[in-house]
Length: 130
Image (cartoon, rainbow, N blue to C red; front, side, top):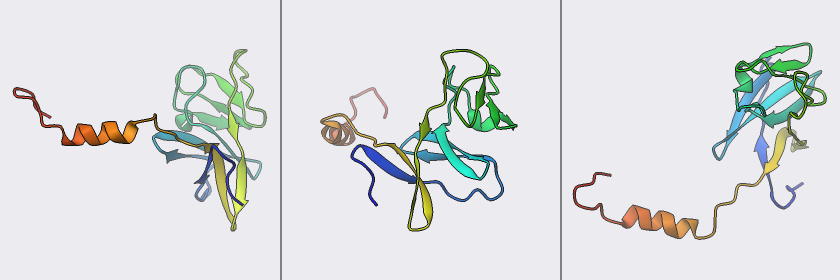
């Protein structure tokens, strides 16, 4: 099984008795949740103001963000506190006995490699430190 175009498979790791944990992939953090024995993956930041959901409270299949106390139903992703907010879930797939999240592939802007190589080789200007 291969990932769909535009999608990357990110290993979820092992729960080790945890109800939630976070994983990182190319600078983005995702939250892995065990909901009734089924793993769910969402963004690690609250959709309200970007609070760290991994540091939130989990009780009765609800995660509450520690910043502004917005609560989300873990089964549906729906915000129980205010309309207009919802957790985005990413599909979880099993490959070779391991579980992965299908997350959007990271793409760099055109010319990124050229800009990066120029930045590394360009000498510092007098009076400026790098």
